[in-house]
Length: 199
Image (cartoon, rainbow, N blue to C red):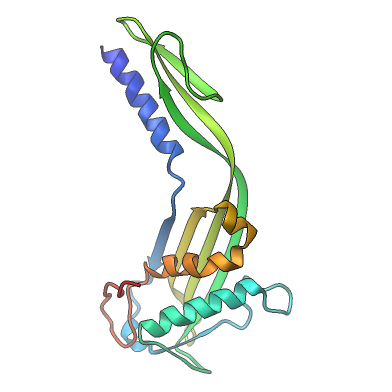
């Protein structure tokens, strides 16, 4: 019985690992920064999403979304702002393994990599992993103290892109950027973090 339970636990662990492809936002903040001193914002001269000496459609879409998010939090655009914002983004083709479980007289669902554990009381417990090609997208937003030239907040979104997003990524950027800013807990002129208003 113990061996049977261990088989199912191992299979469940693989299945959960295979399903961990949803959006994940990671944020870092400079705890020594007084965010209450910031009231205005702008963008770095050449964001990381630009190419050479021209602004890309990606940059323009991100600027529009981020400006709306900052203004919603009480910040105002300015020529010499308190905060500068930069973007970085990339996509990566990789393989994703999805865990699957099966039991019974040698009948297994799925294909790919797997291993089997035989139960003491009969039956065959197997764990299989389907492997598929996916596109993982990463979007980084940096909020920089212009006077000190240091980053005070960084947000990173990692997410599997859908077929429609891969066809027209620019159209999807507002949703992706807004997802990152859900982790930004500050409003203009207030030191303590607050929960941003819901969209």
